[in-house]
Structure formats: structure tokens, C-alpha cells
Length: 206
Image 1 (tube, rainbow, N blue to C red):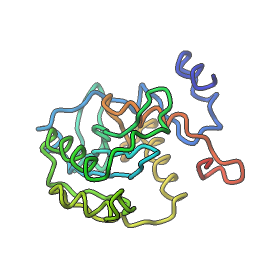
Image 2 (image 1 turned 45 degrees about the horizontal axis):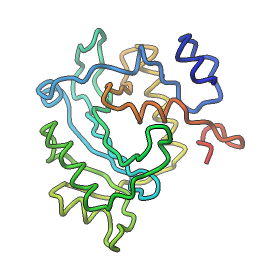
Image 3 (image 1 turned 30 degrees about the vertical axis):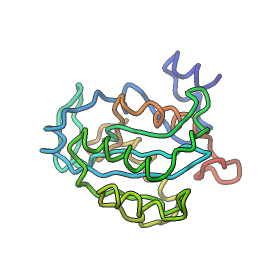
């Protein structure tokens, strides 16, 4: 109810108990054309495997130079999350996956990357076991993607970095920000609703 009120009234201060401050007017942009992203940035992919819970893949682009897009200047070093694909089974409950196998999900991710002419970009994947026992990274490699395990640092520090980039986009001081295109509705929704942990406000509520 609080989140719905914030969206309807545009008053995001009322959702202070949430982890990330996502302002549609600031952080959501129209999808830039492929040629602009390839000229001005570097694509990357990131996947999180799930079976009963959704598997999720995000295609992003780190800008190597500032661009003027969708009525704003997006600074050098900013990250644009370009498009998502996932295995969510229910639009009304994004915590439920459709149990797609890891090999098929890897192919699904590759198709998205081909769409953006980015299938040679680096992809990081949590190397959980697939339904047949092989590592998920192996399935991504078999699909022809340059997949590897992520360099895991502190989870809390990761949330801090995301919040910092969201804040920089808001304040427009010329520092790298974080943006999402309209092709990432599930990512935007889950980030905007993510609650802080009661005992540690820098972490997500499990």
C-alpha cells in the first residue's frame, strides 16, 4: 500500500523503509538504440539461477563516454540495465519460477544478447548446480557465451554501491549513475519493493 501510494503521488520519501530509492522520473529511460550503446559503452550480462524461484538475467551496458538520451545527460561510467529475461511464472508473484532447466535458460539469455548484438560480452553467473548436475556456468559456456563466476565481495557493500549510483543519478552531479530501461519491469518492481533488514539497515530483509 505504501509503495502504491508513492507511485501514485510521486512522494518517494514515504518509502524510507525500503532498500532502494527508485524514482521513475530519474532512473527509468527509453531503450537506447543498439548502435548508440555499442559506440558509447560496453555490454555485460549477469545471471542468477533459480528453479522453484525464478532464474534472472540482466543485460547491462557500462558507458565509456557520456551520452545525451531521453531528455537527460547520462555520465561516463554510468550503468544502464538494458533488458531483462527471467523464468517468473506468475506476474502477480515474482518469487515463483517456472522450473525451466538451466540449459534452456542459458539459450534464453543468449537469444536476448543476440537481439542486442552483444553475445560476445562477458557474463557472470552464480555457479549453482543445474537440474542434471552440471554447473550453470558450463551450460552458459555450452550456449556460446563468455561465462564465468562472479568475483564475490561483501553482499552489503554491493547494496551500498547500487544505492550510491541511484543517488548520483538523482542528484545529477556528473558522477556515474544507475538507470533502467522500460524493458526491465520485473527488476524495477522488485528493487522498488525490496525492504531493509530490521537488524541491519544496510542489508536486505531475507
